[in-house]
Length: 92
Image (cartoon, rainbow, N blue to C red; front, top):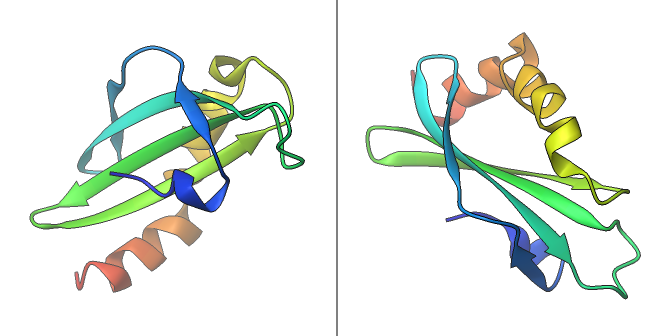
């Protein structure tokens, strides 16, 4: 699951890994974007869920070290703005 189709062709950089966003179990995975992609060089896709509902988030990165930015992406997703929207979206 994810929304990488919004940023074009992407190839995974390894396997996904489990992470936590607030109380939810999540998966995070880094991708290399097509070399002609004007948006960036790599992307991080994070998918989190509450029961049968899920939210996908994609961060496009301008360099080829997505693991360096992943902690900031996770911090942002754990922030109050995203969590308020997640609670509304998930009907909590």
